[in-house]
Image (cartoon, rainbow, N blue to C red; front, top):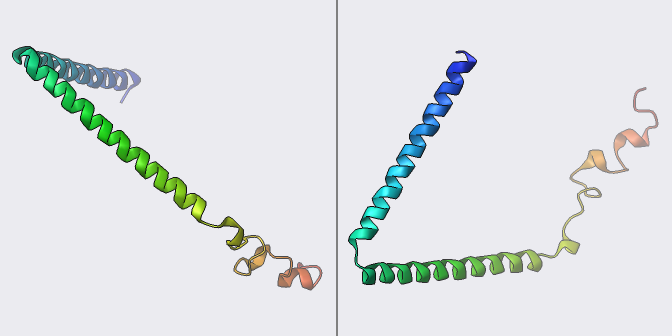
Length: 103
């Protein structure tokens, strides 16, 4: 496939997406024009209330995560460098005790 074909394919997909997006916007506008002003206002209030609830839930979850991070005690957590599970990192490795490890 040549470079021109790749560009042509990419631009055609982009154009199709833009056309679909434009159709969706036109459909939304048409639906909004069919409703009377009271219905539009009521829907706007419902949407605002829904957004408030979402924001409250997000702040609650963020606060919980923040508390979980601060509740863990990093001072008592095992030290990775000095830990015995990572023997090749410790200074008391068997290779260091014998002198030259290549002999």
